[in-house]
Length: 230
Image 1 (spheres, rainbow, N blue to C red):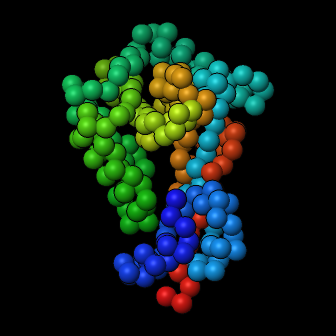
Image 2 (cartoon, rainbow, N blue to C red):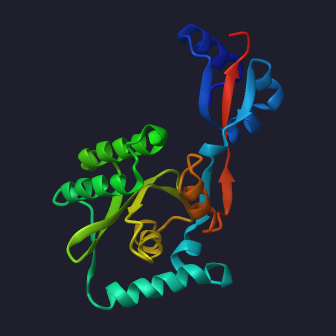
């Protein structure tokens, strides 16, 4: 990591005044006093990462996950038991199907509206990832209902014991789909990892509620550093 004394020099040379998405570990490592000598530290709560135990989301044990299990049972009874569901790995032969689904997912959430700029950016990032899927170290699955893609998820390694669920998209109007698919992602994409990072909620109330409902093991705090005397 770049020490604060070096970071402030780089910032002034480059003309930057703000650093976003700074992990709390940066301040812990160098000390608040050393950082605040040059920067004002602000919380960046909308971009805190939610970190879960893989086993918690793969097994959904205990009373706190009872509602999730009930929704999964309902979805299983209506769709899986009737052989209407198929899950496949994402690859070159089906990324176009994911792109078509992504447009439907976006329409459902009106993510191209001006006030939904974060969702619109996330949609574009997902498109870029799918178009270059084979160039990255990624694992992904898609779920079809009656032959039509209704959900997809993509994970990427982060550390030796943690991977991120970079994208997890599912149609909202199908009861139990999200809970079923989230469980499938935990079981199929995170073998060998202890922790599953679902990244941030971007300050979107519904997403905040959904991520909290899965009982994160810990939060990785994001900070914003603002250069003093800029």
